[in-house]
Amino acid sequence: MRCNLAGWTRLFTPMALLLGVAGAAQAGPTLDAVRRNGEVRCAVSTGLAGMSQPDANGVWQGFDADICRAVATAVFGDAGRARFVPTTTATRFTALQSGEVDLLSRTTALTLARDSQLGLTISVAHFFTGQGILVHKRLNITRAEQLDGATFCATLASEIERNLADWARQKNIRITTIPFDTPPTILAAFQAGRCDAISNDMINLSGNRTASPNPADLVLLPELVFKEPHGVLVRNGDPEWAALTRWAVFALIQAEEMGLTRANVAQVRETTQDPKIRRFLGLTENVGTGWGLPAGWAFEVVRQVGNYGEVFERGPGRVLGMERGLNRPWTEGGMLMSWLWQ
Image (cartoon, rainbow, N blue to C red; front, side, top):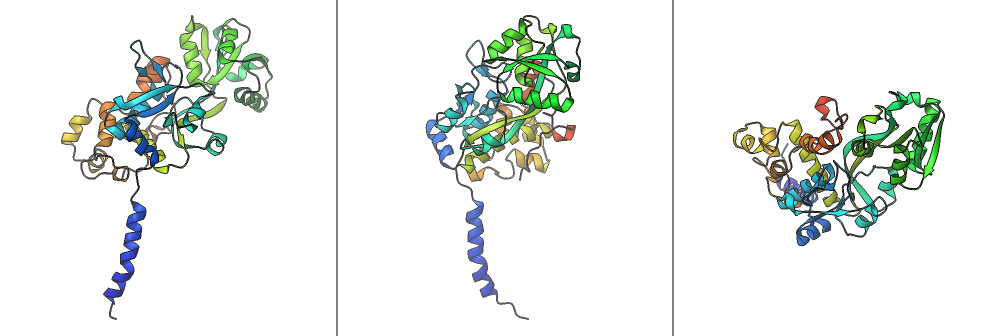
C-alpha cells in the first residue's frame, strides 16, 4: 500500500499550526499592567502578626507578604517589587475588584460564594487551616467536646457563629452565644472573662493568644470546628495572570519537596545532575515562556524568598507558634502538592 505523503503533509500542517497557536499562552492584560507599573500590588491585612504586618522599619513581614514577594520575583526577578496595600475584611474584595491591587493574599477563606459571585478567581490554595476554639486555662478543658453548656463571645449572625451552631448540633452539646459587633470587642470581652471561649480561624486565635497579657492562661484546643483553606485571589477574565500567581506559589512548594532552600539553591544549581531539579531551575528548558518569564524565574523565587517551609517557619511558625499540620508536603502526609513541573 502506497502512502500519499503530500496529502498527509497538507493535512498535518494546518493541524500543527493550530496546536502551536493553542499551546502558546500570552501574557494577559494584568501582567502587562503590572510590568508597566513596575510592581505587584498586593492586598494584605492591616496588620496580623506572622501573616502580614510591618516591622519596626516599616518592612512588611509574614506568610502573606512573602507570597506577594514570590509573585513579584517571578515577574521581575526582584522580591522588592512587591507593594503592600493594607485592607480590612470589608475593603479587601473591593480593592481587588476595582483594580487598586493585582492580587489578594490575606487570611481569606476560599468559599463557593467568593469564587462565583464576586467577579474574582481563586488561583491557588496555599494555607490549610480551620476554625478553632480558644478557652481560658482555668476551665481545665482539653477537648472541644467538654464545652457543653459553655458561653461563646461571637459576632452576631456571622459565619463563625453559624459554624459553631452547626458544630454544637453535630456534637449534641449546648452552647450559648453572647453577641458583639466587632472582633476587638469580642476579644476584650473574652479576656475580661465575660465568656468561656471564642472561635475564629486558627491563625487569628494563635495571634490572640500570643498578644494576650498572659498567653499561658489561654488554651488553643486541638480540634477544628470547620475547615478553612486560604489562598490567592485575582480578578476574573485573566487566566494567564491567575496561572502565573498559582505557579509562583507552586515554586515555593516544589522547592521544599526537592530540598532546595535560600541557602543552598545557588550551589545546587551549579552541581546537580538531577533532571527534574535542572528543569525546575531553568537549566534545561524554560517552563515560563508562555508568560515571557526568563528560564531561571523559579530559581530566583527560591533564592530570594525561600521554599514553602521557610516561608511558614519565619511567619506563623516562629511568630505565632503554629504547627505546620496540613501545611506540610504531600510526601510528609500534608496537603501541599505542586502540579507537574514540565
